[in-house]
Image (cartoon, rainbow over all chains, first blue to last red; front, side, top):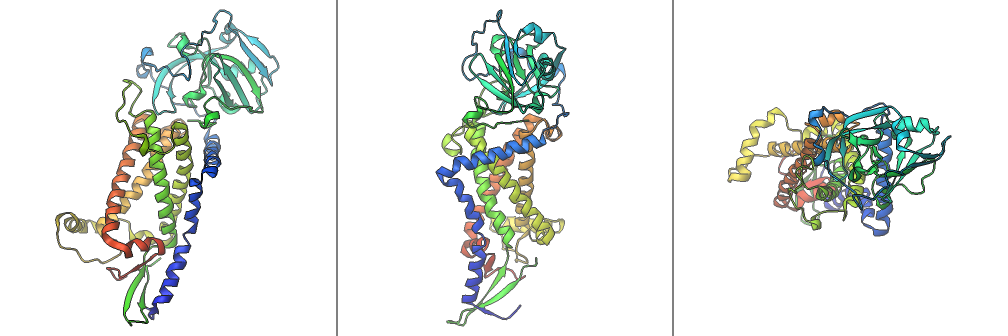
Length: 239
Length: 230
C-alpha cells in the first residue's frame, strides 16, 4: 500500500469520480415533457431504421403445416372501427394511381387472373397475440408488375372502405409472401376479414395488413403513414 | 483492473481508515444507465403486456392477469412501445459496453461465478438466511454475490435475446425456434423480467443492509472501511 493520503484529498478524488457519472443525468431529458415526444419519436425512428436494415428481401417468413393452422372460426377479427364497412362487392373496383404505367380501376377478376398463391403463415398482432392462418391471393409483386409500377418508388399506399389507410415500403411490397389476398381457408374473404381484397404480409405486424382495400398508389412521398402509425405506432414494424 | 487501496489520514484526529477502489468508472456508468433503462423497460413492458395479458394464441380469449395501469409506463400500447423500443437500445448499448469492458479489463474476475466459488455458496446462504456465522471476506464479492451478479448478467443477455425473438420472429425465426416458438419466446421474456425483478429485490435489500459506505461506492468507486483487503 502507498503512502497515506489526507481526508481532504480523498474527498476530492471521490468527488471527481462522482462527477464522471454526469452523462447518466443526460437520460433525465426523457423526463422533460416538451422533449419527451420528439425523443421517443427519434427512438422509434431508430428502431424502424434498424428494422429496415434487418429486413432481407429473400428471407421467407416461417410457413406451417395444415394441421398447425387455427380453425377459421377461431381466427380473431380485429378492426379499428366496424367489422363490415358494407362494401358493394358486385361493383367493387381497386383504383390504382401514382407511379404506374397503367393507372385506373381494376376488378377482382383482374387480380384473380394473376397466378394464385396460398400459404399458411403467422399473423402477429402488435398486441402480442398471433394466429396461423391460410391465405390465398395474388402476389403483390405480380400485381405491381401488371400495372407497370415503378418499383424504384419508395412506397405503396392503400386506402380502405372503412377509411383505414396504410403504407408499405417497396421492399416489403415486392416480398414473395406479400399477397393481395382474396381467399382465406380456400373460400372468398368474408366481410369481417376484409372482403373482397386485403393485404397479407407475414413479414409485417397485423395493423399493416389492411382490409377492405379500395385504392392503391405507388409513390415516393408519404403525406400520411397509416391510421395507427399517425397516432404513434412504428412506421415500419417488420417482423 | 486490479482493485487498489489507499490509507486515508484524518489530519484533525490523526485516525486512519482504508478505502479500496472497487467499481471502475465504466462499471458505475453502466450500472446506473442500466438501472434507469431496466426501470423504463419493465414499466413499458407491463403496459405492452396489458394489450394482451395472456400467453399463447388468442384462443381462448381470456386474460391471465389484469395488471394495473398505474404500475405501467406509456399510457397506452403505442406509447409503451415507443418507450420500450427506445430504451431497449440504451439497455443493449450499456450491456455491451459493460460486458466488453469487464472482459478486456479482466475486471470480470471480480464477479464471475466460477466452479471454485461453489463450496463458498452454502456458508453464505447459511449466514444470510439461517443466522449462521459470517464467513470471512476474502475478496470484494463473496461466492453467493458472485452467483447473483453472474446470474443477473445471464438474465440480462436472455432478456435481450427473447426480446429480439418477439420483435423479429421472421428475420430471427431461428431464435424464436430455439426458445420453443413465438409463444414461448414471449413467455420467457415475461418470466425473465420477473427473475430480474427478484434479483433486484434481493439486491436492494442487501444495499440497505450494507449501509452507506457500500452504497456510495457505486457512485464514487471508492469503498471506505472495506471488509476485505485487496
